[in-house]
Image 1 (cartoon, one colour):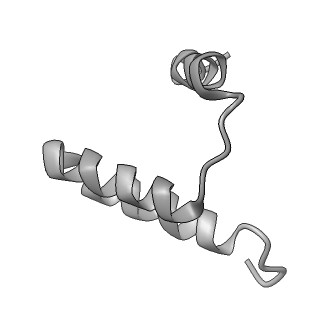
Image 2 (cartoon, one colour):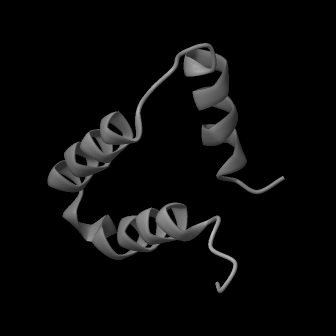
Length: 58
């Protein structure tokens, strides 16, 4: 298990029953970046990966 899996597990435990939109996730990512601008590159990469996850070319 990666160290970051603990955060993912907490997310599932606390919010796993909720239904959210992609727009809600995008807003939370923007809020996170406003508070933590040093994470801009990893968040950009994650958002791009999510946007393209189903693309067969990638």
